[in-house]
Length: 377
Image (cartoon, rainbow, N blue to C red):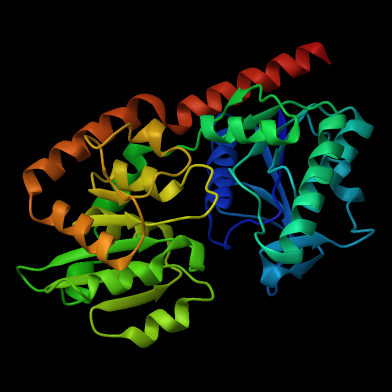
């Protein structure tokens, strides 16, 4: 079968949706299928290529609205070659991008069965006129896509519940996931980065990790202020965004590393004493939480979408009631001063992940949906 994944953003742009697409597409190729990824053009990258994983990538011209966070497909984007590829099944990532609307309309016109996977539990924009207009647009976009009749799935139960806001009853979940064995191999690689040495973590000190987009809602700055209160603690921040410059300016025990290759992120998580995600963003199911659990890294986080499924309670992670630096410092201290309890939380989280959140299970569900759609077709 030929699978086509539509995603407004894709690697090397960092993010959970991008890695979700990459992982599912790779499973398609590994199972003997063909995988095409349709995304937005980026400077310096070809309009079409086949990458080292055997994935065929089509990059369509787009306007980089909101600093590139919301690519808008250019009118009359050249796609005739794409539709000549005999696509058997399409996966449309997220409910609201202009490319998602275009993909749903084109698939319906051409009789290509498809599903829509959503990754968020809130509106993209908040506050002011922009927030009002953003909500109006999201309801309009969802209404258009819904009318084409394709089933919606959420990456967590919380996402499925959020879809009801748009009058959508989800067909089920296709949860975010990881491959624990693959991550373990990356963590043990002979050329692995030694982050404790690179960042000069004291012998009796602690390494705290943050991975994600550096936007205010993710809480990296609050975390940095908290770590500065803890003697001997070093914070490694992997990611890019508008807060990167401010984090670099803090210096001292705070290290803004920029965008890192995935292998180095896994190695950072496997060597850290704690992974902290103080996000207040409308997450769908943060990939970094799954990767931290797979690396058996103790977790401090807020209650966000998916956490209750991966980390049911305080026996699996330390939860934050708020994201003030003082609260973050207290939660980190709880983890760092009782390593025995932290190891027990890690083991529980790992067992839950290995049983329910692997790409093999997600791919099997997607394949069953695609095969049923082909039979109906």
